[in-house]
Image 1 (spheres, rainbow, N blue to C red):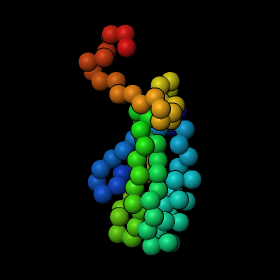
Image 2 (cartoon, rainbow, N blue to C red):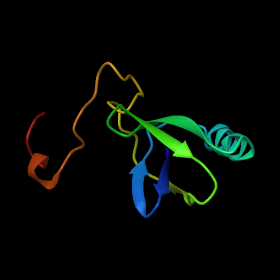
Image 3 (cartoon, one colour):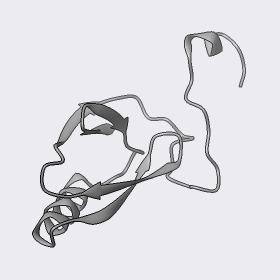
Image 4 (cartoon, rainbow, N blue to C red):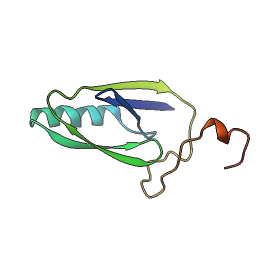
Length: 92
């Protein structure tokens, strides 16, 4: 499974599984052409992030392969906290 990390002004946000990087990039470029606009993405943990994309706001996209996470389905009505080392070995 691919995970996309979006970095905005040196703050990184892992996106939910299944986010389409080409769609997000196209929305960001369109926002720049308009002089600025809000672009909304779904984050890992099923949370939403609204970004004001405008000239001078640096965006970076990183793609990496990660194990599938069944809870990370983009359903904003079911947010979850990502696993931590404390979860290791315990049923959640």
